[in-house]
Image (cartoon, rainbow, N blue to C red):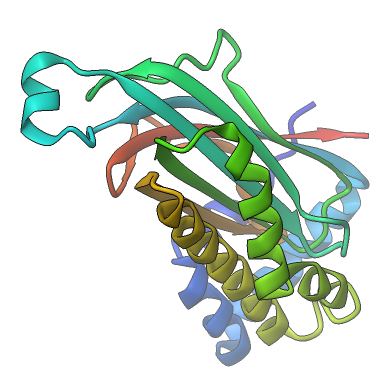
Length: 237
């Protein structure tokens, strides 16, 4: 059963970074946050899933000739998802062969499920790095491990559970850490010879019902050289 909150639409109007700052400085917004949290608490434990419904690639590493002659390449994605529970962050990889400029990645009838979390806490942070491959799948796992080591991401994720939601600056810190992880991973993969296509990043608070629904509501949302649509679903446990 889907979870709804009457405060989510109000909060969804705020940019995530602006919203985090505003919560600490505006009494009126703080009351909305408190009321929305109470409503979500009444719903009890929930399960959260993130599914990408469409990913359209708007570039080709072969440049003009690739566009003119419809050259096709290999695209892969690395998605990460975490919340404020302190659970290990999730990541998922998927490869797609024979993709040309303007193609939609073949995600299947139900889309590409990239995260499934039980009883998330306080926020959900979603990243997807989209790359065009020249180096092969064997390099990907090592690059992910190295990016995690450099950013100390696992340590940040563990620490956040002890302070959220009392200290929103730590929420900002963990989101910044995941941004740094995505940037570091991109750099490592580029050093392997792959091409960066786009980085998708969205973030939703618990009082926003964790972003439940389709994003965008209609059509596709553009991030650099891809256009995407994804769905966040909540179910009562």
